[in-house]
Length: 629
Image (cartoon, rainbow, N blue to C red):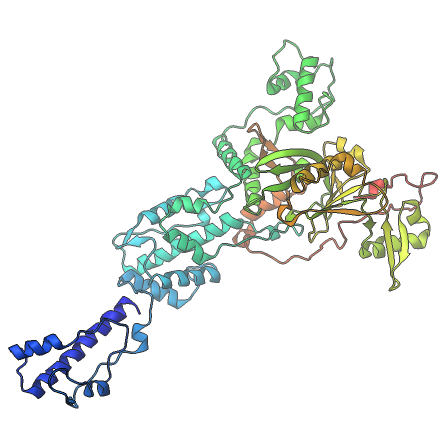
């Protein structure tokens, strides 16, 4: 029973006792208000009951009460005495209703349950639950004046452009000291709505990933509106708490700093861009040479000769940017030296900050980070990068490498490649009808399943399209990482050649690094793994508690270990799509998820494409591995 109920109960008990004693004194002939010595003696002998949560005595009980003392008879009470009754509702705990005119108006606005203030029903329902639990007391004002909590929240929302968001998406109302309760209540809920929208955008993205491409999937945790408001009501600094909804990854924070720098330089077009031209080798002369020296920090010389010191500096730059490190100046190197135009840097950074919001807040103690536009993969443990390698990724279009976060569960040594039924039906059956030996010539085997359907597969071996090792992280897009016989592709600057899977330049070393982290006592070395090569598949299972998470990301802007902003080509056009959603006609609904077909291309990512004609002349394997992606 709450305090209010106890007070009401005590008052009614006291009233009842007073009525009863008055009746007793009247029956004895005493005069109320004048205490005699006998009265006081009698009063001293009346026991005082201990307080207890018991209902008051009923009328029948009072009538049968024995009076202590020498009188040993039951004294009837007058029939006209009314004994007060307490209902269950009066003693049941209820939210404390704040006696506040603004609270009254808040109750009315929330009871109306219209969408005039809140953009989403879920936000409105969360606000109803939150304000009801606090008796409709305002969160942002006190006595009609804006609180420090309210001031901090408004100040933070006005500067969220530093987070790559637009303050106009979170309009803050005016709180006037002389405003009437109805106006203050409406301003209260408008600020609440703006904060709920911001928290959702900061946590999950201003643009929902489903609107960007069908080959993106993240299992995000959406913050509950009532929980957001409860945290803000807890007393913590509102600005600091709102900032915590943004990603806390170091990669995101580094981009945030670079966004501020890019905006500070927005009025400066940067150094003059170097023009493209013919390939330059040591000893050649070109008018671009002085500017190239200046950009790469090579001491100036009074000539335009492309000399060896400059070629060495170019080669070092090419290594840093993962270009073909020949030391010769080609147009790809010139483009990399120029970088994207500075007036676009801020937009590119914002697009990448947006994609960081899609990632899990906890990347994992041990994880694998793939950056598709950089064509690299790195293994991170306890916050430190322990290994990095080159990869080949999917072709632009329907064969692009997807974006996702999934758990790597095991490694397969000597994998078998099984052709998906859709590929058999659409690709290989026509080939078999034209040439029954086509599959055999490219190393595929054809069998018949018990139900009469055809099974086509490639057995383990040196020529298997998956190489000798496959790294498995089950996902809806059927992609994985694997070895490849096509080692020459890693010498290319741009490596978007696959059908979505990722080919790893040194899979033996990759396996050794991963197994040293998840099975440190098993002593898996490259040599031990190599001794497992054979004709039978072998799986190395990862302990469930130590399984690394694989994050397939698309970072066209990132900050390297030296603190330098690195920009990459938007090979899949995803920057363009994100920015169009942030600025275009879909902006109003850009944060709303949409349904996508499971496999929009209609084919498996494990596809092997046959050439247009299936004969290979005297060399049956000519061009074969080029079709394994």
